[in-house]
Amino acid sequence: MASLLHLQFIFLIAFLLISTAISNNCLSSPAPISENTHFADCTDLPSLKSSLHWTYNSTISTLTIAFAAPLPSSDGWISWGINPIKPSMIGTQCLIAFKASNGSMIVNTYNLTSYTSITQTDKLLFKVLNSKAEYSNGVMQILATLVLPSNMTTVNQVWQVGPAVKDGTPMAHKFDPDNLKSKGTLNLTTSSGGDGKNATAPVPAGGGGQRDNKTGGSSRIWSNNTSFYVFIMFLGVLFF
Picture 1 (cartoon, rainbow, N blue to C red):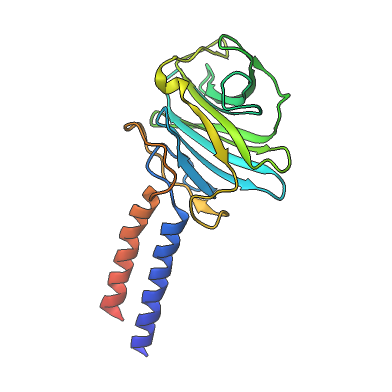
Picture 2: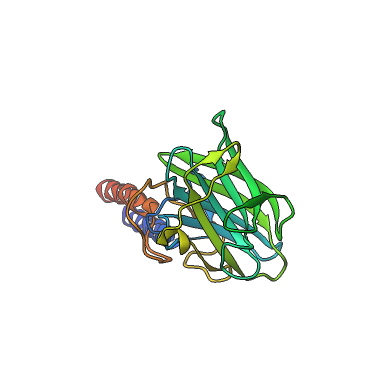
């Protein structure tokens, strides 16, 4: 009987380890600050040391995202948006997050109509159901749920960070190579791993070096949980 229980215990731990490895498939770029936030997929973006976690629900055409990036300065801002035409800054409709003068976090929506001006508006290609911003250890993130046009399976995403906000208006970002290449295409129907429903986002990673444009790999939750499960397995071997 003890031998059977022992075997069942080992199978349970193995299942938990495999499930964790499959569901957590990000590298260690800045990640959602809220540790209880769950997403189906994630990717390390190719510039600005940033990352995107997302869940796409094709049934109701909603896209829930968490975009995270280190701030270039304490008074800076971050932005993530969609360009309905092509992966380019001009024409992008975006969410920009920053700290208000009273310390509260703000997320506004804008149309990027030129390289020198932006227009705050709520008339976008997509409807914003909810949005908020968080900040921790030099990393800011935008969490939002968007309603996309039906049957949209790819989006032209554009992301950015800026150094300052003046009178509630984000100031222009740098035009360094890293800033200029912060754009790409996101395929909403291609998952990098997991079941596409409930992958757990890793804990935040502040700063760090430039990441390659990769999707997949192991998140920090995998490494943290592995130690826990190995310890539990050891107890099972010891007492069963």
